[in-house]
Length: 452
Image 1 (tube, one colour):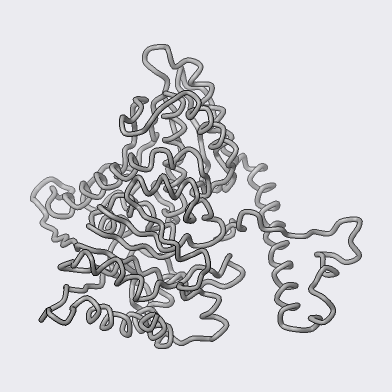
Image 2 (spheres, rainbow, N blue to C red; image 1 turned 180 degrees about the vertical axis):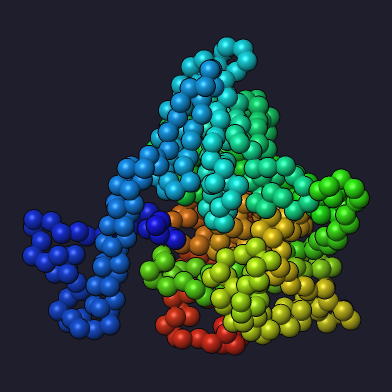
């Protein structure tokens, strides 16, 4: 199976070579003075985990090759079809880049060729929506850069009530080859963007600094439109049998905080970098106070110990529901107090939304006046749709393209998503590493956030 979190870009994993005296590079441990210490043991364990992960990746790759699970492309008349199999974790850019270039060679024909994406299990049913959305935008960007159309085939289903359950299904399932008027265009830029996109070969394409960032303003507009369609569907749509109108209430907030918790509490070194974590109260207040919101929504995972079968969420998010509840129990009164001010009798209404569907949670973030994101890929994309979004971290080394000062961060700024320089020094984020080392209880975590 694919590891839940990929190895961070640039991570070195020493394997046995003829020049090594010991397998796994254990002879390269820290200096003898550290031998037998916790640091040496931790480094040895890291090397072992890293090598096991590479072995599993290689094994899965061989298995995928045997079953024909690599992305592939083919002509369909003038159009090209890129198929991304359900169990494939191999980067689809190679196939998509070849297909788009082949189609672009015939783009002067009428009608213009179309880049068709056949990947319903990736975009319509996968629960790793934060990591798969940038792949959708990367493929959209490839089509625009080559001047060809785009189409999902099959689509992610009809829009009836709360379906499709992932926001990709509410985004355009087809798009014209017309260049967006808000994006500057020149031949040199286009060639650099195509080359940069196709060199960034990974399934986690938010690390890529070319391609999708160029059109960040377009994605923001489309995400907000998708969220609006979902919101309208929630407020009143025909029942599935067409017999009567169903009424839904979908009360939105002026400001939204994405409180990522369940999978943070679950993380350890085997799942990837431990530099993700919780955002302290002082940072939240820094952005919330100028807005003076009437209501603040806390979007989070279910605050229960066991997931109900009716809740659409991952098991690991519910596993720590009680702990997340206890953290918020300390944090929320301080947040309310910090927003009330000395001259106000009543502060904003602060509400917890812990039972939204995935697309519901993303819609709240996208339709807010201000959305504040923790280190998370889930929140980045809907925050592009908000009037103003704040990204307080990038969630690990594999998200380096979104760090402050990077090219992608500048492009996101044009889409009103501001990258807050919190993550570089890690001084202001309560990191998972610190929580693990200090063995902090939920109450201690909440108190730390309140005091910092």
